[in-house]
Amino acid sequence: MTSDSPPANGPRHVAIIMDGNGRWAQARGRPRLFGHHAGARRVREIVEACPSNGVKYLTIFAFSTENWKRTQIEVAGLMSLFRRYILKEMQDFVKRNVRVRFIGDRVRLDEKLRGLMDEAEELTAHCTGTNLTIALNYGGRDEVARATHRLAQDVAAGKLDPNKVDEETLPKYLDTHVLPDPDLVIRTSGEARISNFLLWQSAYAEYEFIDTLWPDFSAEEFHTLVSGYGGRDRRFGAVTA
Ligand code: FPP
Image 1 (cartoon, rainbow, N blue to C red):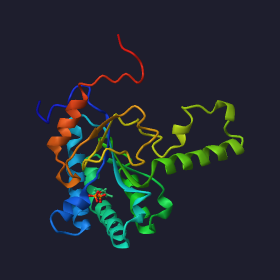
Image 2 (image 1 turned 60 degrees about the horizontal axis):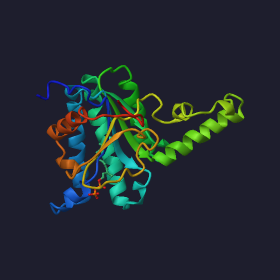
Image 3 (image 1 turned 120 degrees about the vertical axis):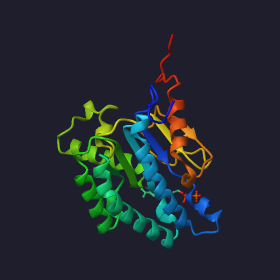
Image 4 (image 1 turned 90 degrees about the horizontal axis):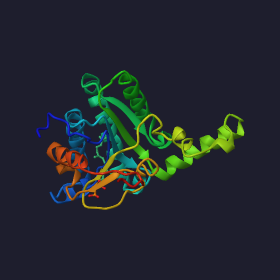
C-alpha cells in the first residue's frame, strides 16, 4: 500500500503522547529545548500525513498539568515555542484546511498565548479537513474534575436532572465534547504509560507504545502504525462469533 491510499478500517481518530524530546537532545549534547523544537517540526509532518492515512482527527499532548514542575527555563521555552508555533502555522493551517482546537485548562496560560489559541480556533473554524486538537495544560483527571464541576453547577441551577446523569452525560461537559473518542493512542520513547491523557475518552482505544523518540518519529512510521490498526478486531467488551 502506498501512503496515497488510506488503510481500510484505519483509525479515524489518532491521539499521540509525544515523548522523548529531552533524551533526543541530550543524546546530541544539546539543551532540552533543542529537542522540543525538533519535535515541533515533526508535528507539522504528521499533521500533513493525516489525509493520506485516512486520519480525520489528530490529538497531540503538548503540555500536561504536571509539566509545570519542570525548570522555569524549560517551561518558559515551551510556552514561547507554542506561541511561535501557532503564529507561524496559523495561515498554513487555513491553506491546508486544518481545523485547530485546544483542550486543557487555559486559565494558567499567559494572556498572549490564550489570545493566539482563540485566534487560531476562530480562523480555522470553517476548515473541513483534518481536525487537529492540541492538549495544552491538559490532564485527564483535571478535565474530568472541571467537567464534574460544570455538571454540578447545572444540577444546582435546575438545568440538569441528577436522576438523568449517565455515561452519556459527562462527555458532554468534557473539553473534547465535539470530538469522537480516539481509536488509536500512540506513545513514543519506550514508556508504557498513559500519563493522564484522555482517560475517559480512551476506554476502548488501542495503544501502541513504540521506542522511537518523538523527534525521530516519521510519516512512514505513522503510516505503519495506522495500517497495523486495520487488522485488529475491536470488540468493545463483546464476544464475536
Ligand atoms: C515530552 O518530551 C514532550 C513534551 C513535554 C513537550 C511536547 C512538545 C512538543 C513536541 C513541541 C511541539 C509541540 C507543539 C504543539 C508545537 P520530554 O521532554 O518529556 O522528553 P524526555 O522524556 O526525553 O525527557
